[in-house]
Image (cartoon, rainbow, N blue to C red; front, side, top):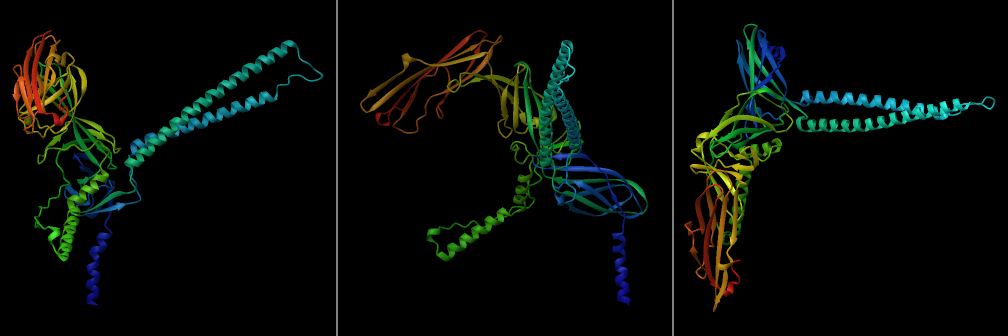
Length: 538
């Protein structure tokens, strides 16, 4: 009897907890930290907590939540006892606002289609009735010519109107049907991207000594989101600093709309495993000199470590994330080992539709030097290059740049923030006012034979014309071949003041050109090589 009493007494707390009241807490997303892959979501809600134990239930949350990342913080005179999460297969996730608006439009269009079809039926029946009652007289009573003319006019006009109404109705039905199909396709697209077959439900057991008001804050990590940097590089002219407009492409398909939230964009990777890497023995074995039994052991050993590598937590996380990343372009490779967080000043709304949303990250003026560079052997054009010193202080990440020079869009480039140079070089595209021409000088070009040897002479002239209203500094680059064998000899015979790098054969001229002036440079070289190698150079 005593054991039975103790058993019943021990069950009382469990029964009391099981009978604890439940409250469904209404929350909204307040803050989101978006990573290159994934997002940390923080949502909160106000509530009244009764005296004693109470279950707070959060429903309709993203199915992509990492259960191990769930955190609950209480604000008020109550404490959090436990946190549990389950998967709800009965409540699919759909971006409700957009779906409701599209469904409302679809209902209106379908009602319009029904009305148009009904009116078209009325016109058709009236036309049939008119055609069936064309007889206007009897055998006993004829009709006068005037009556006949009047009836003929009536039939003609009415039939014409009916035909016109039916054509218009058919045309309207065709347009409405097309619009109906578009909305149905859009709904299907939203449901396929934003909807999932289940949601996450989180139950939080709280305890309070009194009935009190408070606030609950729920945070968790979810996949299905990401961002990458994007820049607009604007240069008014070479006398003004470079204006760098920072933006971000943010996309998410977590199943939860982020409405008017505070955003933080982070370059860190929360999916990296925190486990310290282990060193395994590095065995060097030659399979051809190992006994069969030992060879079998080596093969099993290699298979084991391969399996271990593929099943590490970090690898598993990477595999899961790769299936759930939204439809962004390939994720930008941020600077290794360098983590940066960018807090966005204004709140943003980003729907769970997989589409790209642009987020402004501010503007930066970067003083720099401008240089015109040309490689005429590759392209007869001059490129504007901005040279930015001490660029590390601007907290840049690698990303695509849209280039604007003197108010004109000139194309795209890539900002490489992983380079180690002290000065960042940004190509601003071609300048149409710097004209470049490269031509071979025929009078100094020849191919000569001497016994078993051949000598080829080449000469080129590069001309650069400045049609801008101000003087410019132009860097001209060209090259001569570089020999890697003793049988082939290359000799630069004229370089016209160029800086010559013999290791790579590069020639560099830095020339100042006044407005409406043309600067020409010439270089010549000769190549000696055996006849047996054939025609070595063009």
